[in-house]
Amino acid sequence: MTGSRSNCPTRDPPAMIRPANDRDRAAVEAIVHTAYSIYVERIGKAPGPMLDDYARLIDEGSVSVLEAPDGAIAALIVLLPRPDHLLLDNIAVRPDHQGRGLGRRLVAFAESEARRLGYGELRLYTHERMTENIALYTRLGFRETGRGTEAGYDRVFMTKPIGADSR
Image 1: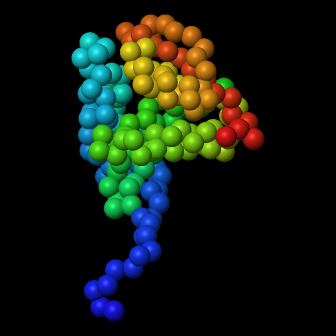
Image 2: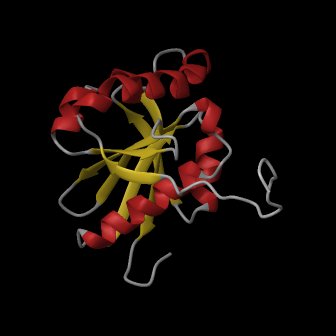
Image 3: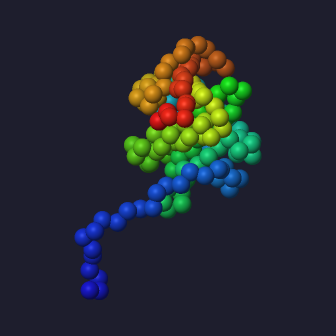
């Protein structure tokens, strides 16, 4: 019948994670700004990710973006290889896409990348006043390894072992 609707639910195509490119820089910077601006008052200054050089990080291949089914960038992750671990330097999700599991999906991506690159450990740090992040990372299997001041920020350092059978 013309104009009738099916009772079958339709599914959006899955979001895609891909390396960021130069055309993504403005969107990456806007997402970081909006995602982290809520913390400025709480910690008394701009969080570290708001000060990063995203043109350089994109050029180095450190930034990946999560594209929503409509092609818009909904989230990003910055991963930095270190001699003995992969550093999850930053995850930012566009506020209108938060609460949809994108952060969890990006952490899973980081774990997969760590395995692919041969690392046995994924590390991260967050500000001690970003309590929501600490709680999320703990739920995702990270454990706190210490606290300290670094680059003028009160940080919580966390780690997660990555093995062939880790999930």
